[in-house]
Amino acid sequence: MSGVQFPLWADLLASLLLIVGATLALIGSFGLLRLSGLFARIHAPTLGATLGLGCVLLASILLASVGAHRLVLQEVLITLFMVGTAPVTAMLLMRAGMYRRREDGSRKPSRHQDTARPSTGGASPE
Amino acid sequence: MKRLSLLTLFTAMLLALWLLLNDTLEPGHWLLGAALTIAITLGTAAMRPLRARPHHLLVAVRLLGVVLVDITRSNIAVAGVILGPARRRAHSGFMKIPIDLRDPYGLAALACIITATPGTVWAGLSPDGGNLTIHVLDLQDEEAWIRTIKHRYERPLMEIFE
Image 1 (cartoon, rainbow over the protein chains, first blue to last red):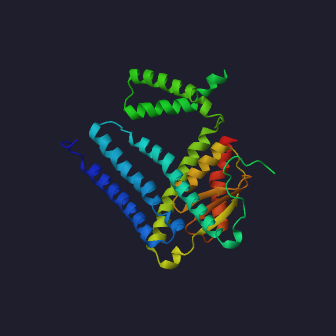
Image 2: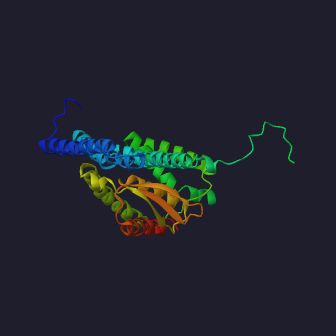
Image 3: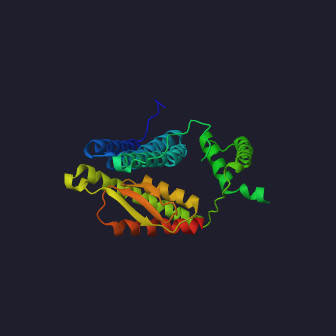
């Protein structure tokens, strides 16, 4: 690929897309710093994972297609895998955060349940 | 016949995935891909006891367009919240949305749409399936969020999956 000369418009468009994508990812990461708490911070990296990634992939499709003189769409797969995995991670983080908050809230003395000790086996009912 | 009807959209999508992965349209890859995808579909049928019955594919295409536009708009909105003044960052919170969609595949799609859109994250469904909790970064107008999610996402998803 290194010897391929791209037309100017492809170069410019791809550079623009890359810069926009990278800027979005940067803003997303900056959001981790600016926002406070897990629940607010969870929103920030989505910028890089959605439109940021989209711009980079579009740039990649553009250059690969121009370089190969045909439509190269393999990058669509990356989108597919991201759409299938990134939200699941975010939801898991969210659920874990909510669970931890609930746990912290219920660790007050009054809420402590007086359940029996875990049975050591062999304990018959009654 | 029942087994045959399994070989529909899922198989077609797997085949498309295979051809994309190999970046080719050669007849050999069509054959190999078809054999693989049919084997995978039949082999994993037991792992997918519940069949999705998507119809109205045009609605799905339109929904995809709507989601892409919304993702772009939310990207700009969230970037504004992050770079904006501190008071704009003080409105995040949980909210509940009454939900009528029941199909598990539809709900999974809704969860992905909501979470993939910057600014909103799916936070759980009540055990009876009637109440959805989401976390919103810029929570000022709950009514607007309910309208967006119910009209723009839930209604087309119900058309597609129910």
